[in-house]
Image (cartoon, rainbow, N blue to C red; front, side, top):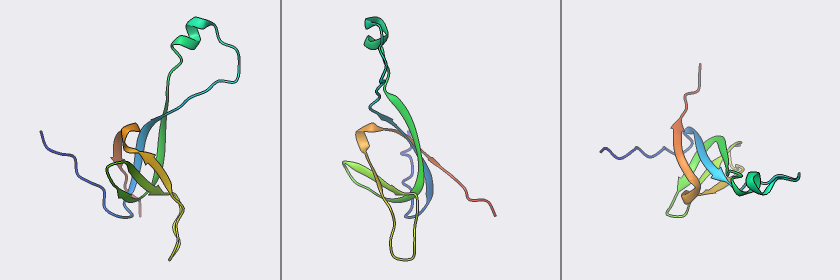
Length: 85
């Protein structure tokens, strides 16, 4: 099986990942027992990835960027996006 390609720096991607989930209301024990994780989709410009995390930026300037750090263990898949003309 071919290994998926790694994103290139500043390539636009969607990271699909699982995060903690919470509800502020009351649930029955049955509903609480099967309450799911949240599937999250974050879009950004790829910065880097190491053994513990992937980093993306939603906004870039010439010298600075914001950053979202997502633990690798939480990542389900990465989708590559194309910017239209």
